[in-house]
Image (cartoon, rainbow, N blue to C red; front, top):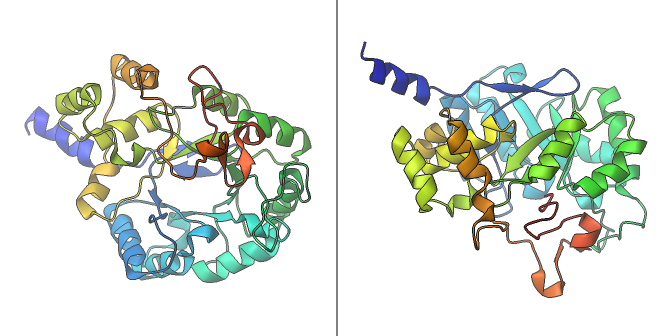
Length: 325
């Protein structure tokens, strides 16, 4: 068989790499994210997850806040795959910081499963019943919430627990009180917001990083340096971005309803050290260092979901921590 053809087949095969977590469980390197850009159940969620599982994905990421856990569960059941083959992540909503156990029970019921592989504190902010965000010094703190989440591992309802949108600053607050070190910190991460310092901090403390928005919401498709790398390898820019994410040691959870892009996204390539350097330093170019997410409030001096950047521990300047979301 022609060597070039063999290489192409190997490149386009579904990626089966996994990352070992600090508790001995393993998470597939490439998953599918179920934030659909809008809240709610629907056939579009069912079909995307079913397509992903058929293609070879085994890592499904959802959240109570997405309000699509019923659809995700339906897709998993209809796939006919054994439960143990699928790594399911869901997340604790801010309004449920006082009742982590009940919230997980509700998610399990919606998903139609007896346990999740990973349960994340979606944001460090807790909310009152009114929806008002509680300040960091208010009750419950994210340390209080974490202590409740630790009990979920003992119950067997969550095999691993972790956090999301946590900065170095807030991890430093949490870790001295944690009986169980978070298995994962899920953050926004792509070449425009690589979070190099946060990634290094998490690695040093045995916390795996999962990257959301790993293809930068498709906004880097015409960046010359990335196009050149993609063309040299005969792949898409999205595949280059995802390959960079996995090669630097993060799992990635891109989202697409397009079956062809689903196939492409789970088909990674090997990047050279020079390629990696280009991607690592892309954020240093003029105008490139920024988040791709719309939940920021720069008009308020820099905030997201009711906490300031200072409270979140996010430094959005190029020389700073780099937004630890």
